[in-house]
Image (cartoon, rainbow, N blue to C red; front, side, top):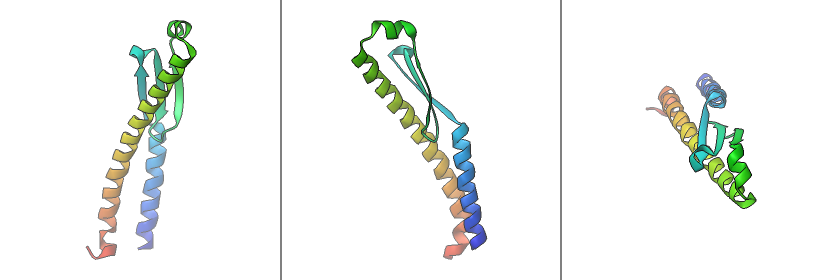
Length: 101
């Protein structure tokens, strides 16, 4: 039983490391602002087109930046949840004997 729990914990760590290597992207205003994040929900890059930045006011940039970040984090959440769900299914299949199933 302990071995199965250790294997499950190791699998979870492997998934976390893999999610660090998966990038998701979000953009607003036709690509004027683009945000990149990992599937572990860490923002890794923010790009703002210079021409857009020159012509936009502060509030507009802030609002669109928030929108792009939230979109990127939502995409990261979907990828993360999908990976964890698949891993949980695999782990529970391996742990099923523990619970008499």
